[in-house]
Image: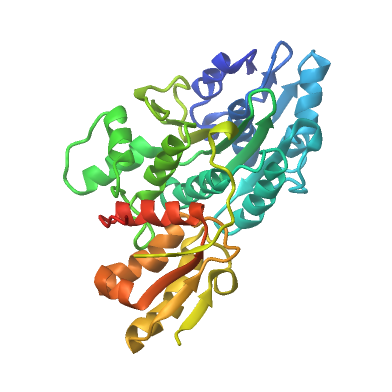
Length: 289
Length: 97
């Protein structure tokens, strides 16, 4: 089976072709020969696909981009190494200076702290003394969300990159769990409530303090908290899950059909606009309740 | 003179439920003893909602906000910590001015 990917718009083919890794018997070839620029979300999407299939002992072959600079990028960020020899974890969390990125990382709530703190320190160097709280929260809230709700067989994968021309940090976290709409509807069915559309279930999940299952007291605050900070810092949040998609900025909220049709998990992309972050301030005061 | 607890010293991190629970256990003793405590955020990383849920959220649920503020005072708070605390408390229906 061959899947040809040339740009972000082709990525729906990955999960349309193979809705479940367990049903496949033939080798898969991912043809990237004509692929141009890779968005961080492309990187996570392709990583999830390769890791999940390889974890099911399927043979996945990648035909690298003909454009040497694009192929070099995949080598630099560790995708080739990660998806061929080292399916559970990249060897190092050291930043990849050449492309101002952190390596792709398999994260759980148990190991995210080291990654977040290291990455925040690294991105601080290029953030003009801005407050990077937004970065820490983006990773922490998304990883906690996977732990609390996703039931992902491969945990979560994260990739973050700084784009100097736009002064943006893109943070992408993805999993291949049951997805937010499925999770919400399972909960509604269990409580004898009618099933709702995938888009409605996404709205349901993003409503403050609403959550289907959490550790004590999580109460569904995570995604809503992230959304609050995205809006306050004039950044953007895009959430792809099952067949629904959500995009938000400070002024806009859009729910629509997921462009990655048949995608079974959840992928969250936060684009942090460095210039919109507040200045870092270390002035310490008492907080009056 | 009340005790002071440094989050940096008592919590493994400020992101997970389990670390929030570490703080909860320490603070809960003060609620039971009715003794005031300062919680210092000096050099603490930003707190996730999971961390806050398992620490201060749990205490507010158990004891109520009036009791909470009679026992706990946050000190060494940076502007970003303050925004996180305000946002969290707002999500609990508590407005801080």
